Image (cartoon, rainbow, N blue to C red; front, side, top):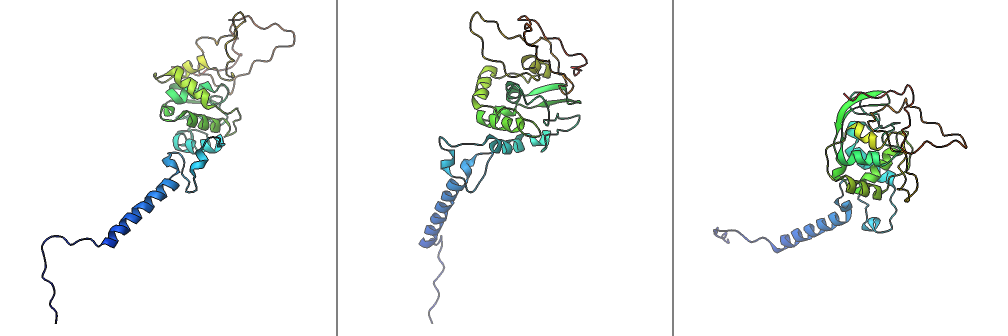
Length: 249
């Protein structure tokens, strides 16, 4: 009968077929991650994603692109239905803050906002971080377009270029107060038109010292009758009687 081999010191060699098997599995895993990872983008995952989807000329639905960003960045505070949390976080549903002049919500996302305000009769006093500082311009445009056209809101989409311009103008600063935002972008106002040519009358500036108003009770100014002269440039439009303002204390 044949005797067994004597044990030897050291390590035995790995069979060559196991080395090839490990290399093959590593290669297949790399191929899978490269083709099924969605580009490792933080706000989207689809195993059916194809690189051609992100190519030039691809049409992106901002509502579909903005929803997952909202779910990841905004839902925790403002709620999946945009109703907010009474006394803590303001509602987005039916709110005048995200609609109208797009520079208002863009500024808030880029720099954050802190302080008391009243929205749709709900008084809150909290801070919103500058979540937009960590987002790309197109992602801010997508999520704001989603908010401006969800929860009963209806307004124009936000363009990536508008976000880029605001980011360049603002730079880095402390969080806004509601009063500061409203001085620059009053509720209910559309985005100001481009600067008029030299020699033409400019738009009426917003009244300094505006407060955080609950726009749900404010009455919009009636359009002037035909033939009525427009107010002189620089004159402030009086506040509608009875429109309450939120306390700034």
